[in-house]
Image 1 (cartoon, rainbow, N blue to C red):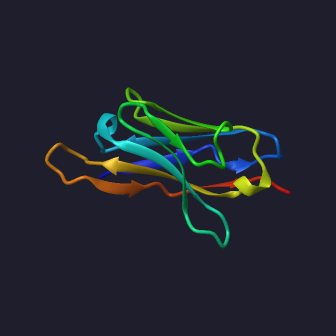
Image 2 (cartoon, one colour):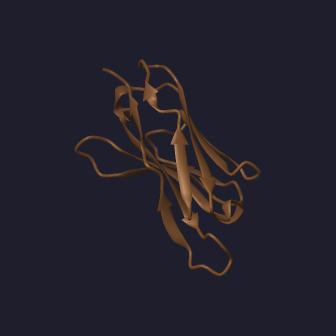
Length: 121
């Protein structure tokens, strides 16, 4: 089965940095679209960044210039480097994959368990 295991969440002071990691298994990683979403209290879940199988990246305006998404296909790992964090970044961050477990399967969306990022005000 497809598994997305996140790590790296925690609490950091404003202006600080965190790096989130997402290890994928059970999926053809190299051809999957990978993304990070976040959901703040009383807010809808929003796309933070995504990276295509070709390595093309897209960022939400609110994080451009501060966050960097990357992937390592050999390790089946996607990361989100977060710099210059501020209280508005406080949210649960979710790793997401759009792909398939084998070439015959229909592509589906998969989600990690979520990891809390807290930036005190």
